[in-house]
View (cartoon, rainbow, N blue to C red):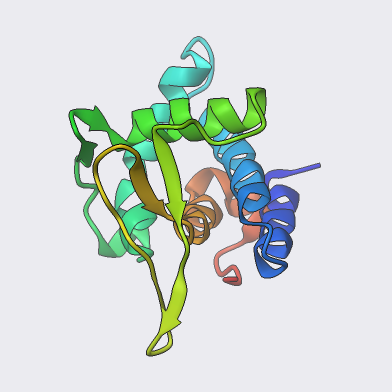
Length: 155
């Protein structure tokens, strides 16, 4: 199995309304990509968080990495990469659910674009469609060029 297969499976889950499942597979693909970018002896957690930090502009905007800066995004003093690692990746993989401090907002198509609520608080609310943006960042990662090629399809 490959990073590409994880992204393809995540796309299928998204299309069938299985959004948390899409997140799980996209986060697995992100972990594999981060290991390529930050090989051992870098720890899994450090490499994963740095990868999320590296692609935060794409994660938030959905735009190609070349078109957007990577802002430092902080939710109530907690960096986005920490939230994605601890409350999404670790909880979904180890506990089978998103951690209580985070919730996904349901996206809707408005004027042809996905929109959802982003909120800082208790819980921090993250747009569910950010998984599509994460998938884009993984497809565009130079480390995955051999799997996805120069141009890869979007979901």
